[in-house]
Image (cartoon, rainbow, N blue to C red):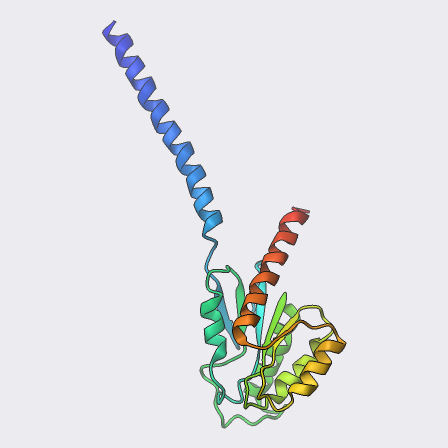
Length: 202
């Protein structure tokens, strides 16, 4: 009888542990779904990841480091999206590097940007008021018809008219502020995520 009672107690204890494990696993899964991995930022000239995560290229005003670091602000805003942020702004940029195809580091930078733009799922483009951003204008021309581009060009950008007309011609969604652009990027990322989930494996 004593042995039977001990066996019953052990069985009950084992069942409780197993139930706790199952519940804990489900809770962990729910927690993971509610808390996706943090976004990561890849700055030029680091290698581009190829792990299937949604990537967002931060195109826009840098002006050789003279423009406000809006890319850092966007990275903070999108930190909880679990995406790869491709940032062309370099912490080690040397103004002495000549903007010439014969300058190795300059070529490395341009080739990184071209590859990252091509790889990105979303291109978030921001024209800082008061800047000129000739490279960003070039990138607008290259990718206006890609379907990946979202842009913000507030009043004060010297070629706002050109940007707005080009965006309208190629049906590029455009916004009047950086916060509005960030919100649009969130929506686009969520749409891409749902589309990928719906496609399923294979």
